[in-house]
Image (cartoon, rainbow, N blue to C red; front, side):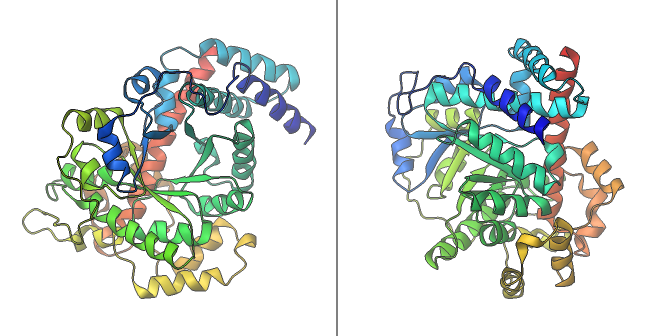
Length: 419
């Protein structure tokens, strides 16, 4: 414990070494834009989904309030070489404190420094809230995730949101952090039912639907044109969260994430939060909607290829939540969740007839999703999806997690090369 405390102290000092920010006073000239004010009037909060400082400067205005980073976006910045000196210095200082630290732990700590240091630069420049993401190696470890989540928050409690991945362990991590009043951005969500469970069990500040990845799954696998799949899942999630908030059962807000075109900005106006990649924000600025109603469409049309139905790829898991599933969640809420393990959560849903919600993935499954990247190859999963053994939301979730893990590995390799 003494070594861990010593490491935490030096990492805190390195991360904040150049941070001298007066909150409420951004270091860049920030003005308002009426285009974005029209979206804000529908109730939507606006975030930029980028860690690139130069790109963010071109788009940031007073209507934006937060920036989202993740393993992929941070890796892009680190691969530019801008933090090579920081990496070498951080490793050296940590090793002075704990000379026999093993390589895996050193990589974890240096990666922590990079995430925190870069996040603080974004805070200083834009006076923005910034989401910082846990290392993917922690994705299935409750205790260590809580430890590192607390440490991230202590770096900048005024502006940091802690990103926790939606995994069986993540449900418990987000709950524990939330009970410490640490705001969690619960990431890698794809469906209304995933976020329904998260909102009631974990009660994070934010949940997500990675909507355009759903569209890409359908389009890339020639199952249809891909239009409206993610939007339908997003709208269904928003409606469920609104009802839960009205009933005082949660305060969780929804982020429309993984947006891919400017048209989605207006189409999803009144969703709690938009986090937009720079390309999407720039596209909307160039061609804003003339009329924004803020009224979410009740039933979007999904255009599938000839002979294909939603049942073929278990698509209904994205937007439908049965009364039986809700009753299952209510029953779980009566149990001593704080003393459950991730495997207990998994087993609970499996025993209740919802094994497709948190499937048990084999080593071979994980190898396949790692090879495929963030968009799974339908042919590999066709039979299991059709039989209802796995939900499409669960498949997209595990694929997203290991896509981020691949980028985290790339970042770690950059660190290794400089040690």
